[in-house]
Image (cartoon, rainbow over all chains, first blue to last red; front, side, top):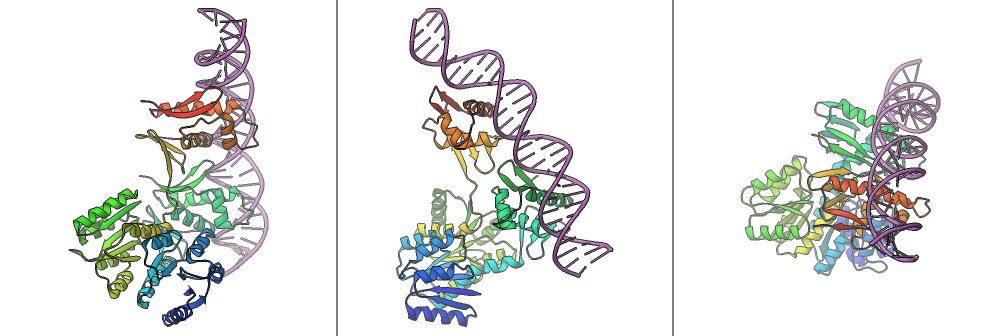
Length: 224
Length: 224
DNA sequence: CTTCAACGATCAGGACCTGCATGGGGGACC
DNA sequence: GGTCCCCCATGCAGGTCCTGATCGTTGAAG
């Protein structure tokens, strides 16, 4: 588990790094905002501890920039100012949590555990929608007593559809997320896999269907 | 977005529910731990605001029980006790965030936004005018109990009209925005789709009409 | 008031496109 | 060689979109 600490006050930064290492995290430290944004931009960290008042870019700017770049790593903001408006703008700029100094190290660790628990779990757990359960580690799709194995493309498409059951996902989005941004896959590929998926859903007697909206995209629906 | 509030102190609970509703959330309230766990067990909520000190099961037990049942809805814990050990055990029992009373409502809302931002995401938005509701994701148009599907061109035209109900939209504007700036579509195309739209509005028994102003453009009107 | 041209509304038809399903070929892996 | 997965090509079905023709309406000129 990798942690990035962005904090200009060197003594505090090093103390935090020490605490992290004692808790068995790997910790890197950036001492100003520009470095912090640069390191975080790699997207290799599991959580970022981000001071607000920084030389170079401040914490709000860093959080906003990261989110805009599509990097959704959990962020915990730290600040000495106990002002509610700061908290709100911090949280709305993309932070997941906000703590005021001084704080007890154990609370920071607990909040980090709470933030990282989610993604740690997800790896082993399964996604579900309606009567479907999709095992995210084995690509097996279960409905009631029946289970069937999905190919990787089928799996990826279904996973994306299940993660956003309320909105339509366009073929372009699916191509980008499943085949990759710079891919020459055609719409027909998506259609083919949607077809396979439907066939398998039918085989499982699932109440879930993949419905298409012409020229817009696909989404999952649960029929009665 | 659905919020469950579990809080035994009735005045605070109702105040929270009011705040949530003003922020456009649907809010349900449970006044003791057993009810809270029962409601939460449905798995239909997007976030749970959970008091720790409760008659029946306490907040820690509820969080633990939910997580054990595989329900991963975000939980924000509330408590009057500002004890770090409580915070830690709360966070480790499955809560995603922890706030101490008293708190500013806006901070709670900001923390809820931060928690829900990650998942459900892109709220399925809709535009509305008069008695019409247009689902911007699925191109479905609803009026009262009836719903009808719109073709893409019809949908685009209606969306533009609904976004600017007070001003007249010229055919040229519609052609530019729906067909594209460099299109050779003719006025008659627009007229045709306006006609389709009117037919569907009539079918829905809507009070909304598309009215034309000669040589100028179209706009929506709500009749009594 | 009447007339007339321009504009708008509507409809039917057919062209076109999108999405669906299927089968075959190719490559990776066992 | 067999199997699995992926990609591509094809035909089909049905919805969507466009076109042209017709009819109704408007408003201004005579």
